[in-house]
Length: 130
Image (cartoon, rainbow, N blue to C red):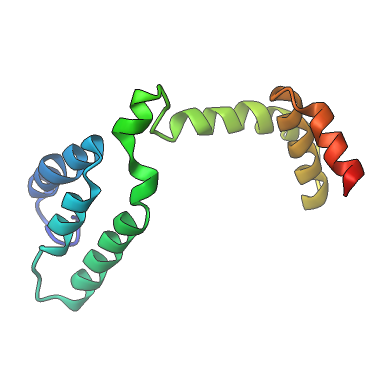
């Protein structure tokens, strides 16, 4: 919306409030895609951005079933995942004086996640089988 209304933050926010957030919250991705695709512009750069955004929502609609996720008491924002990563991974890998190779970091992450998910023995069983 910044490119569509470059000098009018009020218009940008009004479009987002009236279309994007309402339809995302209701899980009505098809309506959102139609609204995005209906935006008119004579600027080819803006038209390309509109197409890219509409394609993104269309392609990821299955991941945006927010009402269904909320009914299952699941989180729909990234904050919980980011905090989990910080707690599970950051607290183990980012301690003072630690340096990791990519292979070593991946191994520690797999072990840490297995331990916290109570699947530590499953992890080792899979490693033995491989």
